[in-house]
Image (tube, rainbow, N blue to C red; front, side, top):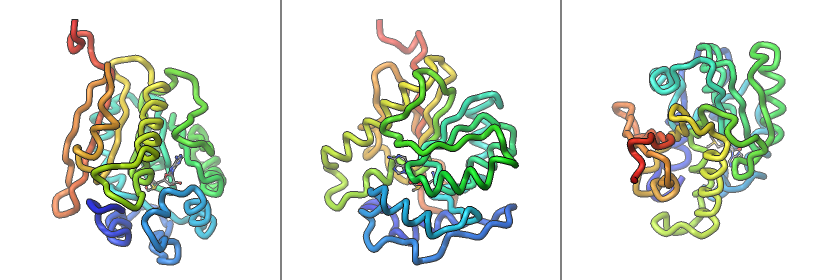
Length: 244
Ligand SMILES: C[S@@+](CC[C@H](N)C(=O)[O-])C[C@H]1O[C@@H](n2cnc3c(N)ncnc32)[C@H](O)[C@@H]1O
């Protein structure tokens, strides 16, 4: 997806997974763009999802079975209200729902995708909701979520042609807008968290995730034998972490 990522095809193959579901993989090459900078465009995603059925699924970066142990550790309360940013047709939301986190609010800016997901899940998973929305401008109240989760979504806003060491002002503005919106909608509680999963190394991500009053923890999570992925956890600083 960029100079520091695998090729677009190998990045997508990274996400292939065996699944309990009867759905098919989204490995049809016809949905791949000619150039990685297409991932920047809403129209690309809209067209891609229009070509796919609501039974298609694809998980970028990390499969739900790899993430579940981390979710159990990081989100101990099953009552947590969770915002899934750029949900795509990943299985993560449904796997988490079936594990007991039933308050999941999914957003993506593709309306075709959101309609498919509503159709697929509204009967089976009624308390999970789906909204067509831009993560740079969320229409949720301040302090209305316990957790926000981004898996590979901010990454798409960085897929410009050019030098990844010097992102354009547009890329910086988009990524900063997402993070600002996320921090706005998280409850001001020590237990609140923004979880971000990506192939992006800390050098390329910390510039967006370093915020006054927020504590950032970074961890390389593998998995073994695969491309190295990272977990970023941003949470409100505790009283004793704040400078006098
Ligand atoms: C790389 S996919 C990741 C999908 C999913 N999170 C996963 O892990 O498989 C990026 C998704 O984010 C959506 N997206 C990209 N930019 C967005 C934005 N500014 N607002 C809302 N959704 C966005 C795309 O439509 C796409 O579904």
